[in-house]
Length: 400
Image (cartoon, rainbow, N blue to C red; front, side, top):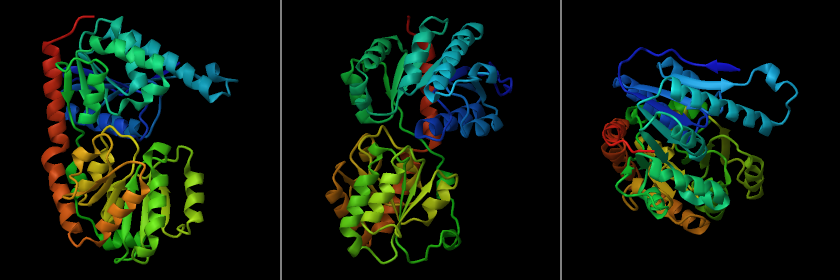
């Protein structure tokens, strides 16, 4: 068994232990990473325990002095284990054991769970520990519970045992209230992003040149992993219905990891004769640059909690077309900073997109969206809210 830990800086601030599945590049993972780094700057001692070791965010966090706890099974234990599921199960068991031991050896002031698996496993383990201040963040709608009824029951059983429960949109808040969470325990903390990182000016001509794009090309962009519920198929169908009314040379940049539907999407793109227009770029580390070259941002999900990708595109000055799920309609003001349309409706998606393409006020919409992110969804404001929540929770610890 091998444990991978960064060295603590020795800060005397309060210790917050985040528990999350991995440090892969995803919305929740990037949020925890940004939050941890900012809390570190403010004198807290953030630490992260991951159930599954590795992930590209690990090195970034370690470089910023954030303590990372992960446990990977040694080679001799994994020798002969070819099943990916069994390997993951072994990693999960070892991480659970490590968490249990760590909570007794050095209890954090606050333990904070992100995403369902971490909540269920970490939450139950924390009940058998000296830790009294427990916080859970829900960052998506509870649609997943319909497929996992028994696990949903465990979540509902855990809710009263939390000191605070956090939602990142009103839609998520409503789900939690429907699950029986006491509104007195609930807090709404919107996602926050580093607006300067996305608003910084770049040489748009040079960036487009690298991608083989002309200065006058209409460039659309959607940053979302290739997962069925992100609605890429709806977007492709919408574009197919209006492709003859779009400017010549239009391009859609799709950015994100392929979780298995990539080949089907490429086949659909070819079927509609748009393989020259739609580019599947995969996961990228230069998202701010890709947003700078674009004219319009998109998110066509069937479900969301609150999307960082929408905020990042708005912070880059892009007018948006998004679906009315989760917090999308709380971020994008319909008709002012873009358009909000029903999910799973390619026809209305196509109509909104065409309106935005033809709207001479498009740039001003983008500017209004950029200012909205600065005013409401900055990382600074977000972390302020977390600090207030932690201090409040520490003053009102719940019993077990």
